[in-house]
Image 1 (cartoon, helix red, strand yellow):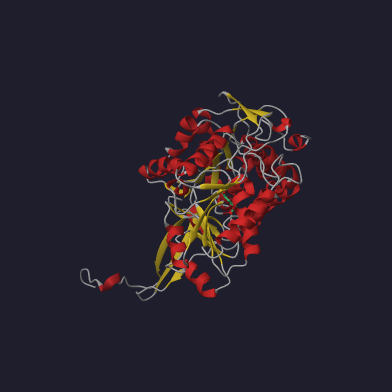
Image 2 (tube, protein in one colour):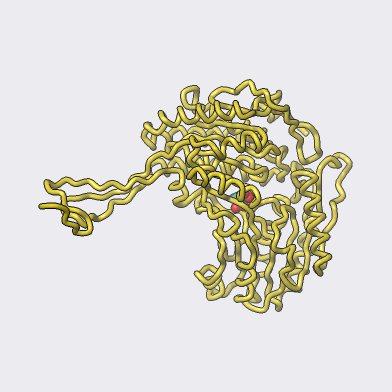
Length: 509
Ligand code: UN1
């Protein structure tokens, strides 16, 4: 493998795991970074400790106090240049995502593009942080709402989107007048270092502390962030288990959290659906990123009239999904992130069989060439079930698709909603009544509901997130920026008397 792109990103030697405007001399344990492709060592990070955390947080806060005074469009100007720097390094960043997270190169490049897109979005937003003017009930009074910068945003990210989720958060936070401290997954620290280097180079000495970085264990630096009163918002992406810790800990000190947790996303396929369109949407949703997106399609709720036909088409399509090195152009399925994920896959397949499911495709570790033996490769798997087995309710971060037949749209909607998670959902149908019912208030209960496209691969322009155990947070596009700011309601009296609201008379007047 040609790793020369690591030098372009400044990752060709041991790197520090803490950035507070300069790269700190960290003294934590050395973290050996391995590629999930073949288990080979691709870097070493000297991890941060609680002392480093305190320094990074302090520097980010000090930078925020100055940054919030800069007009938002001027902040947007910096973000525009950061986005352009992402553009310049798109190829190298895409390769790094593939190398460190194991995504196929097309998806690695797609993730780099998502960072560019959100930067562009944030630049436009920097001139559109609109508040309301509100009619006052009192004469000669004026009411308005203003959005002010919030402070330092703690950003916790997972391995599966090692650069885009930070970009969603930090590009918005920067135009909103905030600074950030990023705690990335210990499985993908090099991506975090590369992104921080790129942003910091644009921001220059004066503003570089705005993009703080802290790479270290959850129990030291993660805990410190959750309890840090200088972090008014923690935006955390990861498992529901992680969210159960983050939410209450941050709430305890009256901090805000934006939680982006697990999904258990279903596609409903009706008997009038365009099945060849559905197959394409399902295969990308279920097999893409080796089933490791929070938006991955995990359940298919298929009308009994077409379920056997669709299943046969899917089995055929899965046979075309080449498993292997994600840098190889032919590959559609790369490795899982690590052996623990492959064990979770094994466990889910065994549980599905035990509970009465039938494996109609896959189910085993994949055969790969000797050069990839150090990676954890599994076969994209289809399980046919008669009903929603207990295992179907769980999110297993691997390419397992459960097919459950349904008799009607209403049954599909009920099953779609009958899981603890509520991130993404789709329906394939050519019937406008079915489509609209699925999107209506009595339809899907998810944060994302699509028609005739799959559950994954959302654009940055919409608000991204979900309900129930997915955590309720919204990030990325639409008006998600509001959570990165504090709202102020102001009433101005420009008259000469002081009428009270609600018509109250108080004293003589
Ligand atoms: C995630 O898996 O955490 O919609 C984010 C998608 C991507 C983002 C996924 N744009 O699949």
